[in-house]
Image (cartoon, rainbow, N blue to C red):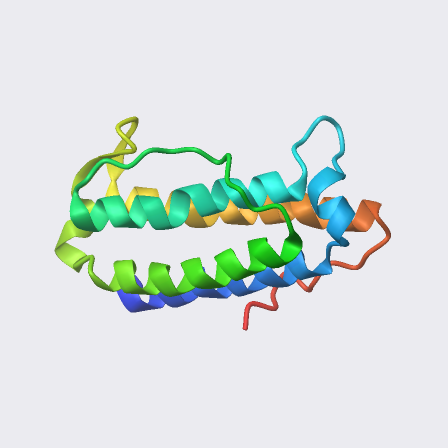
Length: 152
């Protein structure tokens, strides 16, 4: 129903909104604040960073990558810089996947066997889910999150 290019634009819009969400966090709370035993928002973002580019790279190269979200990103600025760098790589890798490949099955990270389109939709859904947790954290901190529809 949508083109591959439209799917990428949809994902990039979510990445813009997630970036705005990261920006709203005070430095300390980005790394320490949690509710109900959930991980701090920085940990959720590190998970996304650990999945998106390595997953796309694996889709393009066929080389099984490793999955670890124990990344040495220790400041808000480091996270934002990495987020921006990864957005460029997402566009580059995504452009190398042709539409015929979208329904091929891939065992991503040697563990998760689904079609490529299913993996891509998971990447987007997972980001939305974790951003929602970030919105809850911001509200608990008395900070207005960005508008959920502001993806541009």
